[in-house]
Amino acid sequence: MIFMTLLFILFLLASVTCQFIPDPRQYQTSVLIGTRLFSFGGYTGKPEYTKETVILDLSKPFYTSHPTWSRDTKGTAPMSSEFSTSCLSPIDTSTVYIIGGVSYDEVSSSFVKPSLVYTFNSIDSTWSPFTTSGFTTFDSNMSNVYNDIQAIMRHGLIYIFGGTNTSSPQESNLTTISTIITTMSVLNTKKMTWLFFNFTDTPTPREAYTATLLKNGYIVYIGGTEKPNGASNETSVNMNNIPIFDTDDLTWISMTASGDTVGSRNSHSAVLTNDGKIIIFGGQSGYGFVHVSPDLAILDTNSNPYKWIIPSISTANAPPPLAGHSSILYNNYMVIIFGRQTTVQPIIGTVPLMNNQVYLFDVEKSVWVSYFKSNSSGKCTISYIGIIATIFSLLIVIDWNWLLLL
Ligand SMILES: *[C@@H]1O[C@H](CO)[C@@H](O)[C@H](O)[C@H]1NC(C)=O
Ligand SMILES: *[C@@H]1O[C@H](CO)[C@@H](O)[C@H](O)[C@H]1NC(C)=O
Ligand SMILES: *[C@@H]1O[C@H](CO)[C@@H](O)[C@H](O)[C@H]1NC(C)=O
Ligand SMILES: *[C@@H]1O[C@H](CO)[C@@H](O)[C@H](O)[C@H]1NC(C)=O
Ligand SMILES: *[C@@H]1O[C@H](CO)[C@@H](O)[C@H](O)[C@H]1NC(C)=O
Image (cartoon, rainbow, N blue to C red; front, side, top):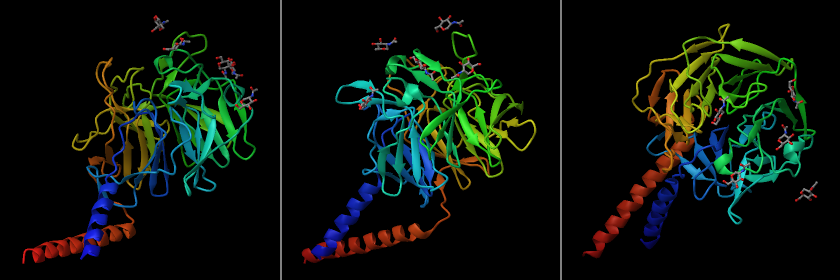
C-alpha cells in the first residue's frame, strides 16, 4: 500500500512537472526540429534576457489551454540574448546555428557582445561557440552586434541579408545607434568563413524583415524597415516590394506583388505552406509595438507576380495582435508562440504585454483552433497508460483510507 501511495505521489509530481509554463517573452528565436519546437532566449524582463531553452512537444495532441511545454535544462544557453536568428542544418537536421543578437551579463548588469555564431546540438542539448572569420565587424572583438536578421540555410551555406550593425548595445538606444548592413552576407559552414555579395542590383538594405525559402531555392524577403542610400532615417518597406534572392544563380530578382493592400510592418512572422503560400502574421508599424493591419495575410507565390490575399477569418481562438513572436508550420498548423501584444498607440512606461500562450491556425481550413491534433499517436498511448495507472493507484489509495476507518 505504501508503495502504491508513493507511486500515486510520483504520478502527481509527474503531472505537475508536465505543466511547465514558460515566462512570457519577446524576440526569442525558434526552430522546428522533428516534432519539437525549440525556442532560445528572448527578452523576459527578469531582469533582461533569458538563457532558457524551452520546447513545445508537437508529437502529442494538446489543447492550447494546456500546451506541451518543457524546459530543456541541459540546453540552457551560454549567453542570455534577444534578436538572434537561428536555422537548422538541412545536412544533419539536428544542428542549429544561432547567429547574432545582443546579450546581457547578469553579473556586471551590462549589455555584452556574445560570440557571433553558436551551434546547438539538439540530440544532446549542448552548445558550442562556432568561430568564424571574414566578418570583421562581428567576429572580431569589436563591441558591435548583428541584429534584426533572419538566416536561411540551404546546403552548407547560411544567407543573411541586411540587418543592423549596433555599437555599444543598450536596450534604450538599440535602434538609434544602428547602421544597416548593405550586403547579402553568406556563411560557409564547412569553411567557417563569411563572404559577401554586393551586386549593383542589391535591394535597399533592410532589417526586421522575414525571409522564407521556397522549394525552388528562392529566398523571399517580406517587410521590415529600410534605409535608402543617403537617407538619415529608416522607413517601412512597402509590402508589395518583395526582393527575391535566387540561391541557385546567386542573383536578385525584383518582384512587385499584386492583390490586396497589406499594411507595412516589421518584426512579423512568416511560414510557408506545402502549396507555396507564405502566411504572415502580426508585426509592428515602426518601433513601439504599434498595431498593423491586417493581422494575417497570405502571399501566393504560385502566381506571377506574387499575389497578396487577405482572408476573412473568424476571430474565435485568434491571438491578440503580436510582434516579436515566432511562427512555424507543422502539418496543417501554423503554431504561434511568445511575442508582445501591439496596441493602437505606443504604450510607454508600463509593463510590456508579453505573451506565453500558444495559438494555432489551421492553414487548410483557414480557421484559428484551440486543439492540436498530432498525427503521431505513439506517445499518446503512453499518456493514456499514465492516466489509467494514476486512476488505478488513486483507487488503491482511497481503498487504503477506507480500510483505516474500520
Ligand atoms: C579577442 O578576445 C580574445 C578572448 O577574449 C583574446 O584571446 C584575443 O587576443 C582578442 N583579440 C584581439 C585582436 O584583441
Ligand atoms: C546608449 O544609452 C546608454 C544608456 O542609456 C548611454 O550610456 C550611451 O551613451 C548611449 N549611447 C549612444 C551612442 O547614444
Ligand atoms: C559597423 O559599424 C562600425 C562603426 O560602429 C563600422 O566601423 C563598421 O565598418 C560597420 N560594419 C559594417 C559591416 O557595416
Ligand atoms: C555595397 O554597395 C553599396 C552601393 O554600391 C555601397 O554603398 C556599400 O558601401 C557597399 N558595401 C560594402 C560592404 O561593400
Ligand atoms: C528622422 O528622425 C528624427 C527622430 O525621430 C526626426 O527628428 C527627424 O525629423 C527625422 N528626419 C526625417 C528627414 O524624417
